[in-house]
Length: 321
Figure 1 (cartoon, rainbow, N blue to C red):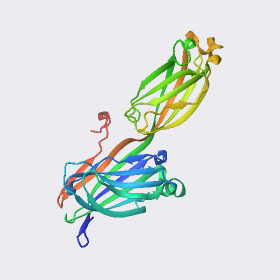
Figure 2: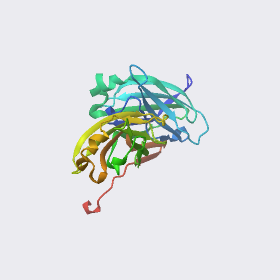
Figure 3: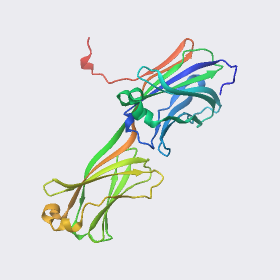
Figure 4: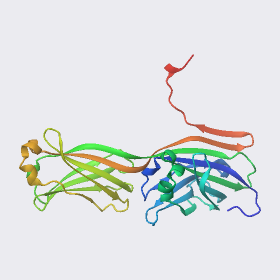
């Protein structure tokens, strides 16, 4: 924290726009891309917003983190964290200060109740379902200069996949036997998972779903359908499950909706070539799916300026000569 009596100056502004904020689930931890502040020794910083689903009511934790950068010195700063309305005016803000070393995190564990954003004052806090968070940094001993600026846009979203699981020689399946489907995905949230089909109580078909090591905490939504020989969906069951990254040993027991006897008595319809076909639609509430730094400015001194801009693709055929 800056000592009393020291002259402090605003040195940096970071504005973080989070689109589709209502997609946030009560246990999510959102991190902005790191941004570099040159006048603070080229140190890297990051904003963190956590939804505290373990509290009642649910609070938002809002923090500033110094990244694990190459600078070994401690940085003394004051900072203000706020949420803005559509006109850029703070709706709520808190200010504090501290001495940051690499990996240090400071902020506010109960910055605001989640319901105030999503229900009570939704139109003010998330117009067009976008939350705008701002961080202001002050430092002493640098001298007056134009503050740097970083404008970040992130988007929440879902990842989805659809595939058919074909179980061959289904009628020969006996209690205790298992058929396993291993799935590799392109998702960073859930890179791999397994579906296990078995027979229990002589007739009930059980499906278990497990996520492998490396998977992040997520909410998975799975819809499994029985497909007949003509490719028509006959029966469908849908369920959701919350996977916790540190509890890899827990399996999701999908609700039972099929029995072996039901399928084998109509084998010509449901088991052509003795194959059971299940259509699986998988959705993962994956948190932030994209980041883009739209503007970045650094004022290195009174007469030197640095800027980074986002470049869009351009069709030469549309260029006017």
